[in-house]
Length: 624
Image 1 (cartoon, rainbow, N blue to C red):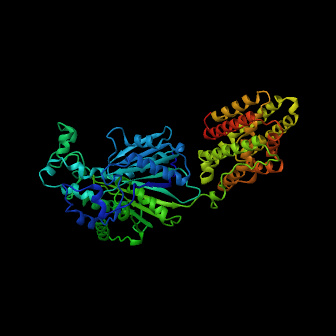
Image 2: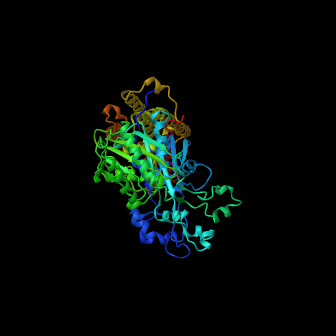
Image 3: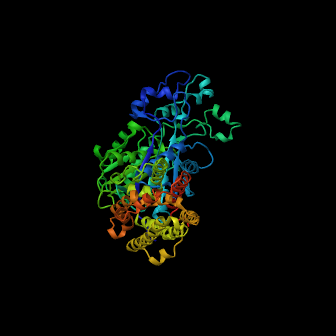
């Protein structure tokens, strides 16, 4: 079985609210028993964190959900690559503690994201959970099970440490204060979410990160639990085995804790595994350009440096990358937030190696990942902003002073602006202008358009046959338009063949459900006596050629490096609508003397319906 290459093609994040600086922390978390923490200054000095983000306000009210933040991180990630939610095959999600014990975290993220049905997987641990989620998504793509996956993680630790949570605990009521193993975590952990888009091909317009390998190891068999919630160390009773949840809370069993006597083993195991991977031939000590290490405190970075030095390895400071000091420790989301910032703020060069290290203290896990920077696949930079012209309705030239005609033009202008604005949000159109369209997706666009375009000449001919003899000029205009539409689908077929498609396959093709609706509506209107309201449909369809098709064709041609004869269906429309005056037929018809207030209203409605059904046709590509 041949394994696929796997690439991180985009990274996104969501950090709630404004940065919270050290002198503001207790304004958000509150004072335990009304007194400032005695450990705060010492712990902040050790961890080096200067600011972090909280999803609670100064009244200790939760402002976000962890699943909601994670969904927003995914949206940010998808936006950066121009990828639609509809393209996601698999969501691999991680957290330390979800908003709910049941159902799984991935289900909650999927619901908040709102994408169609897909495969999901939930991962629950501590910091290494994020790398577990990446590993799962990586394996799914590597084995060919899916083509597009999202790996993501989110944390909302602040609500675990707000003062109100501890007020009724017996230890606090007895005046002993909060245990250090919980109190010091109040100054360590923060909130946020991150996401990666994983695909089986590199991004076209920006660098990608190829995943070379991922290594995860558990050492739970050797150590007691170190970072945990749900019990106390001196009492192995689970929080679910107390007589009531109130009793469990009063006993402090629900508090998140870290055993400070054990935590240094996390660093020792991480460095031990670092050297083992060198011995296994995974990488050389100097064989990487960036060292993206998730350490939860600056204190641990110093220990890592010391232990590496004992083994003869020194990693130059310029290779280290961390945002711990400005973002804080975001647990399972940290590796996502780290790499998002690296991609966004550093000029990464093709071929550079990035070694990621993610140790976990929960019951001790080591995690490593090697990435290689891969250049964009496009041979020239594609600038979508140069082709995304301002939304503007086609220019309708009038030669008479007619209030009804002026009203009609105002209404059609509004219809067009709404139509083109909505069109730009359709997934296939977003891909065209983000530089992420693939050749197969372009062929699918041609394939789906052809089945409707071929009907175009037929419904126009039917409309002409139902125009009465006293409107002979308009009938002739419809017939001429029908002839042009026949030429359109022939050009489209040639483009499809030049892109490697089969004419026989295209000719056997079905309309998608949007095309079915559009064709059915146009035939229904064309079958009416004197169906002049179809001028509204002409306005939309000819407006697409007049205002949109050329930019689509150039954008597709540039990003896919295609020849003129592979995109001429779109570029021909722009020039033919100018040279052969397709749009002039529409202008002549509405100024022919047949226009009444009632007909103008019908034209506007037909334009609205045609626009919405055309949009539906593009939304339903591949849905037959």
